[in-house]
Every structure is written in C-alpha cells, then in structure tokens.
Amino acid sequence: MARINNCGSSEPITERLVVISYNLHGFNQGVTGLQNLILTLCPDVIMLQEHWLSAENLTNLCKVSDKYFVFGSSAMDDRLAAGPLIGRPFGGTAMLINKKHAKATVTLYTAERYCIISVGDWLLVNVYMPSRGVKDRNTIYTDLLHELAGVLQIHSNKNWLIGGDLNTDLNNNDLISTAVNDFIGAHNLSRLDLAYPVSSRCTYISESLNAQSCLDYFLTNNIECIAGYNILDLDINFSDHLPILAVCNFSGSIKCPNTKPATNITFLRWDHAPLDQYYELTRLYLQPILDDLNNKLKCSAMLNTSDIDRLYRDVVAALKVFSGFEYPTTC
Image (tube, rainbow, N blue to C red):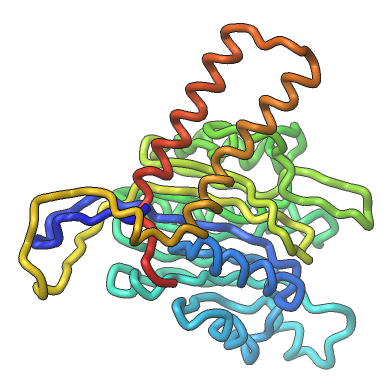
C-alpha cells in the first residue's frame, strides 16, 4: 500500500531501509536472480558477494538497472596481473544502492573481501569471508575481523548492519565459528536469523554436492531498529546461495517539492499501490508462518492453545511490518 505523508517539512521521519545480501556465485549465474529481486522488491541496498568480475568488467553491475549506482571491488586484479587466468574467476564484493539514497550515501571502505557504506544513520558492511581450502584461512579470517572491529569503533555512533557470506555455520563449535561468535559478543551484536527465525535456515544449497548449510548472515548492534528478516526463495536462481533480506527502521530527512499545499493528513491509498510488490512482500513474511503451521499439522492433527496464540502473534507482527512499509511508486 502507498502511504501519503506530510511532506511540507524536512523533519526526520521513520522509513524502511530494505537491504538484501546475495552471493551471486558469479555474475552470469546470479544476474537473473538479481534482476528479479530488483523487479519485485526494488530494495534500497543490495550487498553482493562473489561477482567474479575483473576491475574492467565491474561496469556490468552498472548495467543491471539504471535505478542503482554501484560501489565495489574485484578480487581478480592480482591474479590477472600475474599472467593468464587458469581456472574459473573468483571473489569480489559490491553494493548496489538505490539512487534515491544518493545524497544520504557515503562510500567509506572497499577491499577484496569487504566494502562499507554509510546510508543515513546506518553503517552497512558487506563481507565475503574466506572459505575452507583457502590458504592461511584462519589468519586471513582473524585479520579481517580485526579490521572490521577497527571500522566499527570509528563509527560507534551509527547503527550497524553487517551482512554477507561468512562461510561458516555459526551454530558449530569449530575455530572459525568460535572466533565469529566471540566477535559478535565483544561488539554486542545480534543475529537476525535468531531474532526472526524462519522454517528453513539454510542459505547455501548445492544440489551437485548434495550439501546445504547456513553461511549467510545479518548482524546488527541495534536489534530494536530491525523490522524484519527473511531468506528469499527465488523462482529462478542459478546461484548456490539464497538471498537474505533485512528491513531496517531508517531515520532520514525527506524533502518534497512544494508543488502542492502541505497537508497534515496521513492516509492509505490502495489505488496508488504497486500491487505486485505488495503481494510479494506479503508472501515473504507470511510464507514462513504457513510453513510452520504445516509442519505442526504433520506432527499432530490438533494444535494446542499455545501454538495457536503464537501463530496468531506471528501473523499480527508480519502484518504490522508490511502495513507500515513505504512502497516505491516507481522502480
């Protein structure tokens, strides 16, 4: 639904900042899913990992949509400088930022395995951590966590949203998972997948290897400013990762042109709503609740009172999230 606000002033108002993290597993594999995300949800920021593009080919990301500008880096420069590429390309991080946030966006850091921007009162950190098999993985992983800790200390006045492919399951007790969990505890971070549990937590699914796991995460230092989280199951997805979505409460100043008289009336206009986006967002929030209900009914033909109360609360919470969502009129 579209919401008409009082645009006669530039006072800070609460909006929704929709952020998606997506490991493309290569630009050519992931571009179809990326275009689908933009068409159906028109998110504010898309964090990308493993685009596999060289510095010369990063412009391919700019061609995905003329509604976004791109900030990122390649992981291929050193390898290509050493001679002809043997084997497949690898790595790389980037962010697609909706141009409506251009004035509120500051690009801060870029490296092979992370890139960081500031959008309004949010610090958005996109990470791609080393996987098993990478030489000196433990050392690289530890160094990256130290670098990120330094960045967070500098920007301690911001809300932090750290997203991306951590290449480890944080519910395990191995050395890397323990290091990440220690990092989470030291900086008072919260995992969105724990705050907003979904029916299936797997974000990495490889049919060829017959393997699946949870490798992609969102972390925040202010869970009270998070309005929702979900794992997105795309109709067409050639990557071996599923995108994850976070909805953040976002305080920014909106200035509207004074072409119409100011009004203090706030009301809903269903005739102005982009219904395809409304239906898609409705599905994203209600589908996990339906899956939960179906799982309960598989175990028992009857639901107890506590189950019914919990499902009811989940539905109400979901309705509150997308009823207050600011849907764009164009994308």
